[in-house]
Image (cartoon, rainbow, N blue to C red; front, side):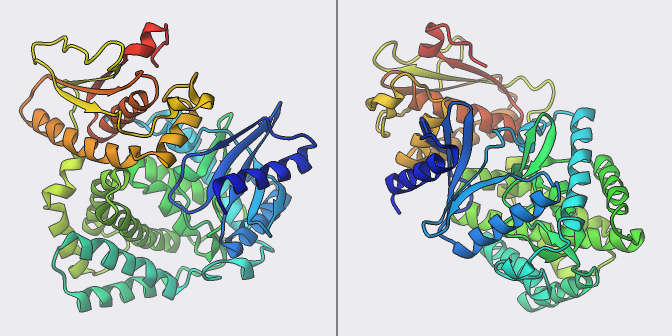
Length: 484
């Protein structure tokens, strides 16, 4: 189905449900899945439209959503569906995710954020135990239960999608035996409740500080520990160990209201699932980062490896995995997997000045320091949304323009290369205690492409290195735009 056909089909579904045609339909930025999302609105009415060619996944999501809603669980309401065209409308939960509340590298994990996580784990226990009661697990895909076979799929994802791509030599037979040992141990945890499968901060929406859950179509019957491990050991969340421990026990208190919990056994299996989930995540990062060269996934590898190394050193699950320990120790010595984790640290002199500008109106900005200039990237070869009437009054910060640049231009590939070049300079400047680096992005009017590129680099450098960033949008600030 083409984008135009999807928009038309969703518009008809919206009109039928709300008794009014949508006045706006915006394609949302793509996620890691092949599903396509759109925000449709008309007056006060708003909905998220979804197109997904996986019919089995659609049936699971719709049935799970209605089941969870019937039990008062925080999931989106399903408004309408047309499965003959693989589309449905669900409640618009807004734009803020728990992920957006995570602290910048080096910043403290606040009491407010800890309290928010407590509300999340309370609702997680309800979703798994109360929500799992009476659920039609025959709808689950690709398997009804997260059993030993499914666990070995996760272990092998690490082996083949990360280790093989990393080039690190390993004893495959020894590693396979250790994988079997791990999954046999985890099978002892049972599989009696709903397992979300990808329970992490990007799939938790926030409405007035209350969590709502999305993207559970891959759920199945499994152990309670897996989702908690996914949440508390998410690589980019970087939750301090003491807070992780506190949240683990807060979860156990909540879960004990709904089912009997053997705490010592639960905790031992929990750390085994933390290990398995971290291996599975590294497999995903290997596929998306090492193979597809997507910067976001490459940035997460050092955090996940550090988590894995600490888990194997502390060994709270009490497992003997010498080959895995040897391999992870070798990976942690690889500079390419540790350089990304370098941070500026408090008091480091480096400031990166990032600017967007117009070649036509003002030209390349001057460097206000005595450094004499820096990188200049020309965005004019990229497909320009400013050529089309709907985008003329918008900027590179508007959702419609962002979606255009991500889906209809080569902006993602361009930024990937720009990030790679700038990263090398930043790492060198951090080591040498330099104080200034300037990076400028130019386009015809300094309104769309260069604004988006400058914003993305600023976010990238803050998250990856924790450096001070001074961000200026030259042409937009001339118009009185307050640059937040």
